Length: 307
Image (cartoon, rainbow, N blue to C red; front, side, top):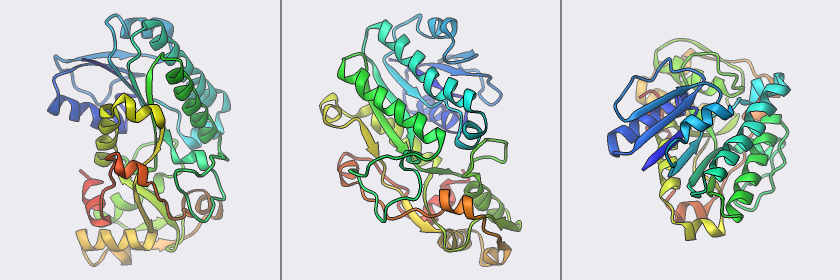
């Protein structure tokens, strides 16, 4: 197989590439603006540039693509600050990629990384697989439009698409990411290292969490589902961990030491808490039945998050 990955040098992309190199023998075509973190490998073809650029896409598809992982995006905070950039990458870029795949004519499996941000705030008291998406940030709106495109291109037989609504993924490295939810990663990383942390949401703030390793598990599982399974459902919620910040801190303490709770000071930001720490319980029995998984426990997540 030939697998195309956009955003391949990003936080999720790097882990996905590493897993594919370890477990499969496929040829990988990687697209990203630059490759500062990915080492050359005989099975990798790395193309640096805009994933939506016509010449870059022509190079990427010189040989037929069997599977696409579309991970590239402008994250929530940056998409909110720079409207034109968010539209160009998250919406227009997705359209250009889908069109390039359509013109190829082989209808590959197309795995689209969407977001729980499609639900917006305030959320209902309970979220399940029938909850209506009503985004309140541009990023969520652009991802919702991407989901609609994936469903429509699949309906027309251009792709065999699936969209996964990813939750907050931890623990991202300490770099400028444009993610408003980056405080969750900072919390885990700083407390595990024994450093004090000022948390911008309250101890009772509740969120949805998943480790990067678990995200990769679910992306690969999405690629393996049968076309018959997808014909009935193209957009999937994922089972995840629903916990308060205090519960996350407690799990970090059980893994990294009893001193951890004393390292935290809470200075809640009302807007941030409303957007990223007021999540209700979530249920997705169809996803569980189809084989999608969570980390299982906060302690497992605390260990995986810093792998």
